[in-house]
Length: 363
Ligand code: ACO
View 1 (cartoon, rainbow, N blue to C red):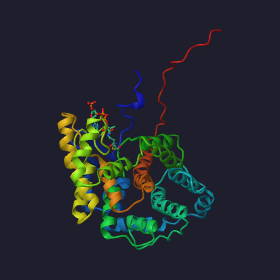
View 2: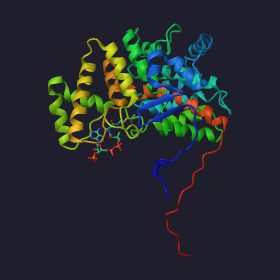
View 3: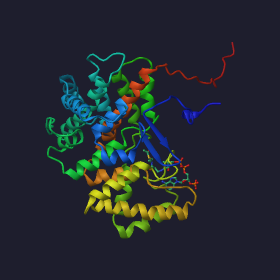
View 4: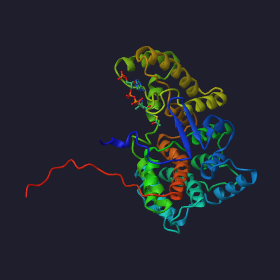
């Protein structure tokens, strides 16, 4: 029997993360995600995923130094971006530029330092390209800013508000890692041939680009735009559900209860929002939609997924839609690289079989 899409097949053992779809838990290296977003920074959680434990003060200091040092684009990366056509798809640009990093000194086996370098430079690539297509010059990285703050600073050319940094940091921590998803699997398959980490991450970016995976939360933005006001919420949602439409940002293949990432994002956002119209609308839409889904789709256990509040965050911090999937990439590179390192530690090349269903020539 063929398991199409390897559905239900366990392809690797991992100590990096665990998803409990029934209980609605996401665990990074033994820590529940909600506890991590409540008390730790992007840098600390990235350290946890790479090294297996939360950093001491000295370890965090060392990681910060390495991350800051590696934020700068190489001359090759700049040259490549300067010749690429500005109408090129954003994810294809990132894939091309990251693969240009492989022009220097990456080989088997992958190292944590290499993982740090690729993570550090990713926001700079995104910001450089984002500014370039608008005819602007991207600000140079600022060494005193954190990873996420510096990303927003380079994108917009001005210092972000603290609440914006916190909101985006929470989103990025929540999307650092999510088990054996398609792009992570791609990275592990490439690494399993004893290819280098740059090739593995390039494979992962190509996989992330597909709309079935890195599909940005733009469907949710469309939903929020269609609803527009608290007053119109029930009417718009009821009509959509009655006509058989799926509500974007609700339901999940693995989580058959609340998506813990959506809960963590909502909690953070409510704490930060103050007078944010979009967040207030999002919370209202969630309440109304869950009530109506329960009424019209009883027993399906449909709740908000991570995309729902990701959209609310992106909208509230004014991140342009073309930055959604690149920003997801800037966080997920940590998970990909952690998996590449884990694969290298106990490597067996991936080589599943296929079942021939073609015909035989009559000789
Ligand atoms: N709105 C309305 N009804 C829904 C929704 C929804 N968002 N999601 C599922 N249902 C209903 C289906 O119509 C179906 O009803 P039926 O029993 O009457 O036929 C039932 O719930 C089961 O639906 P499936 O599609 O079989 O559920 P599955 O778990 O396979 O699908 C999926 C999960 C694809 C995410 C689905 O919920 C969906 O399409 N959601 C909207 C798109 C979305 O938000 N995608 C982002 C997911 S998060 C992420 O990828 C990071």
